[in-house]
Length: 332
Image 1 (cartoon, helix red, strand yellow):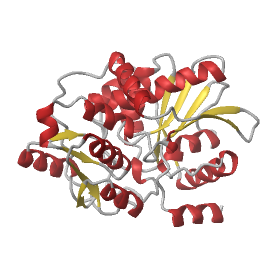
Image 2 (cartoon, helix red, strand yellow):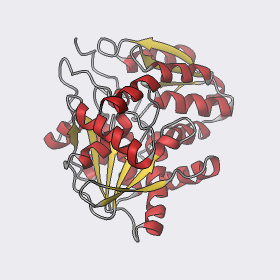
Image 3 (cartoon, rainbow, N blue to C red):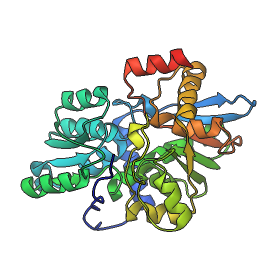
């Protein structure tokens, strides 16, 4: 396997993501869908963490937040020209869901090896899907070509200020729920991390909390970027991973700036640790969590991130192939 050509950054942002933007996004999302549950989870050592069940969103992942905030801020002219997104499946469904509700044409650039359940649902929601080869082609280059040809607006999965703010609405809900159930806001938020959109948004939403981004081993470019002080991409021939939602080749400056300003340190988890977390969430919380969505819980269960009584864990998605999930449950 080889790496594709370097990703193309989105066009320079007209602005940076702000807390005011996060609060505005949170108000929009609250008017659209109910808050996802915050569930107490007892750990094997007897401690407790608080799990934000974003896998229970209408299309199965937190991505609906950023998609809705971005698309509802488009001008009428932009809406008429349609949108283009890049995604392995969860952002794809979020954009497709929001676009259908708003009457906007959507084209999604998706990897050919994306889970069939995500491909099928994206098409069912009315989006046009353009496939690419994850390890030999640049999805951002393909999206840029489509945008140029159609005059469409790029709704990037993480390198977009509106998307970052939208994902940050998760943190606004979380903080309010923890004030009620845990006696105070989160001291630490452990989150799955692909390109850094959710981690960045959470940091802006909850500036007093430590945010810990968690990636699959071999795809932990953000952890290495944060440790080295500069953006680095995934290395050559990255290993296979079940965490399709977290397979990004490199973060973007807009995300890296937020993450470094909040002094984040990343963590990597193994495939076995992810499977164990999926099983634990199923048995203890009765939740179906996809591999990428279970990465943060995996880090806590493996002892790679400490947990106190106000540690929150984001369960970011639940769009998993039923047969694959059944095998994980049966084999563990």
